[in-house]
Amino acid sequence: MSNGPWFPTIYSDKCDGCKGAYKCVAYCPNAVLEIRDDKALVVNPLSCISGCSACASLCPKDAIMFPSKETAPHSTTKKSLLHRVVCRGCGKRFSADRDIEYCFDCENKAKAKGRSTK
Ligand code: SF4
Ligand code: SF4
Image (cartoon, rainbow, N blue to C red; front, side, top):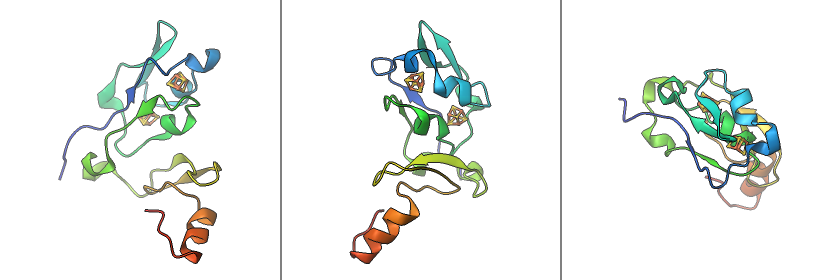
């Protein structure tokens, strides 16, 4: 069922190192990322957890991208894997165990208006 590897791409032209905070590097528990030349760099792509996108949700510069979730190896997109999400509707940060872009409040508002957030 595996369709391909899962790891982030960091756009170095966007990354400013969070002005020294290096939020993604500090957060990642799997040492996927390191600081090189004042920017974050993917150094251990195979250590990335498929389906995780926590580092991207922390990035203030939108410098971290992932392949589409459909290409993630199926076996590791566990429902129990929590990741941080920034709601595209209201900007609220929350944790989710599924592929979701909107918080429950925004989802419910969209449903009430007959729109889909998918
Ligand atoms: S997606 Fe998760 S495991 Fe992969 S680099 Fe980001 S924080 Fe680390
Ligand atoms: S969180 Fe974003 S801006 Fe900060 S170091 Fe990582 S990629 Fe660069």
